[in-house]
Amino acid sequence: MLENPSLLFLIIVLIFLLVLSGFFSGSETGMMASNKVKLKNLSKKNNKGAARALDLLKRPDRLLSAILVGNNFANILASAIVTILMLDYFNGSVLVGSILLTIFVLIFSEITPKTIAAIKPEEFAIKSSGLLKVFSLIFSPIILVINAISSRILRLIKLDIKKSHANDNLNTQELRILLDESGDLIPFQFKEMLSSILGMEELVVEDIMIPTSEVIGININDSFENAKSIIESSAYSLLPVYKDSIDGIMGVLHLKDSHSFLNLLEEKEDFKAILIETYFVSQSTTLIKQLSEFQKSDRNIGMVVDEYGEIEGLITLEDIFAEIVGRFGNEKIEFEKEFIKRKDGSIITDGNCKIRDLNKYSKWLIPEINSKTINGLLTEYLDQIPQANLCVEINGYRFEIIQIEDNSIAQVKIIKKT
Image (cartoon, rainbow, N blue to C red; front, side):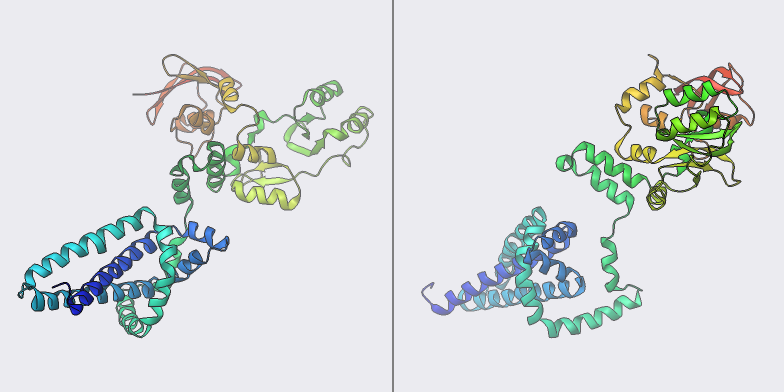
């Protein structure tokens, strides 16, 4: 029976149609599951297949129409050939032929190619893009009619297929998930830096500024010896110069000009020309914007003011860089100096510590929406200046005030309630 040329021809055509159906099924999965970022990266390296795949994905409606038309054409024609084979060569067992065809289609034209495409979607998309481009041109008259009808239906349910490319854009949270799932593809250190950069749009200047109580500067009303001592012991290259309090700031001194400044200060002559003009920063400015402002104004230090123009602290370019790359030196050692961890899991620190740093060190979730420091949090909660030996519980964390100095918390013990 196999010697019959017509039977051999029909079987060859049937096998070809099953392979063609498998190609369309795999192409559908490969094209839709492929990572467009990877395809764009490959296209920039002059990979023509990746460029074709991206071009096809710009109009997914046309691409899907071409795939579905080709797939249905192959399956329907295969079904017709099986019917002929059953009627002419196998005693009319059409039901048996339909069952066998279904099994073969599922195994060789659906499950297998789609599984391969799902495992290597970009590779499948690149290799299939050439033929898909050809079939798109061959089926273009049919595709135009089908798309015209489907577009009307989509408009009825208020969907614009031309805006589908907007789904390719990733927000910050989605980029963070990609970072987390990147595994060993991105070194841990770089992953931390990228995560910090993404988090900068959520942080404002107030979150990382040095509060006024911790700002090191030169009070011109203090003794000359005190000013000289501050300059000689300073770890910073820039120091604010003020009169009486930080609110009376006169400018910023660069240590390279300290010798001239001290001479003029000792002789009680005007030194304002030596100082750098004070640069003011709003406490609600996002870090990413402030970084840009520092760059535009060629500044690297600013005094932070609130909505009323009152000075609340100081921020430097180094502080922002530290948020990206971590503290210079060992951050863990710096935290261990600031926070004393007890065996019972409690932590002892001072009231001026930043809640954000404490949360980072201890993996806690103490709220920091309205207050950035422990002192601010407790003062807001109590609605008065905290007193020593006072215990309060906030959001599952117990705060025990151990010591008060100058109406501020000098030492506090914090423990997470189980």
